Image 1 (cartoon, rainbow, N blue to C red):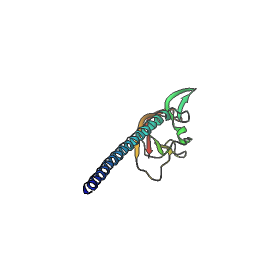
Image 2: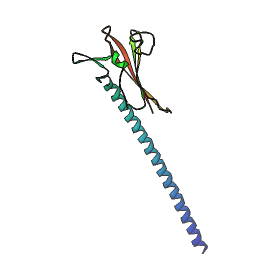
Image 3: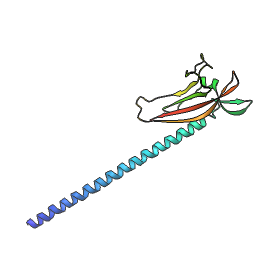
Image 4: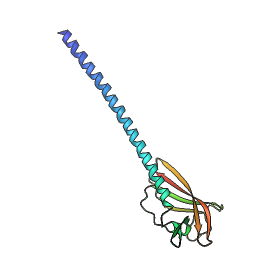
Amino acid sequence: MKKAELQMQESILAIFIVTIIIGLALFTFYQLQLRSINNYKLELEQNRDLILISTLVNKPELSYSYLGSEENALDTIKLLDNNLVNLGFKEITIKQVYPNQNNIQCTKQNYPDCNSYLIYNKKPSKVTNTQIISLPISLYFPYTQEYHAGIIELKSYS
């Protein structure tokens, strides 16, 4: 009778240990899958931001065109009054880098004596991760009919 009870206890102990090992393996697999999904999510967000910043320069609401032909420049007057909506939690700024001027945020009152345009700004209440992408651009000033060098910077919050 004692031998049967001992074998039963050993069997229960073996099943318990195997169950714990299988549980740990499933938990580890779950954590690895979760990390992989988060990496794919981050990569997708980066690709979306790259597509957004590269196509934003060619939007008719912001780009400069002369007699129907598009020039590779952003119209600075259009930057003062734009209607960009539903881009998510992002901040998009455009800065004139050459010739260098005072670092002043552009408004309708101080244009063209400024060098920074905030064209979209929507921040979440809690920021956990910020990614910054910037590209060189050309800025067109219609009053003086001059082109200046600039940078468009996209900050993506998550």
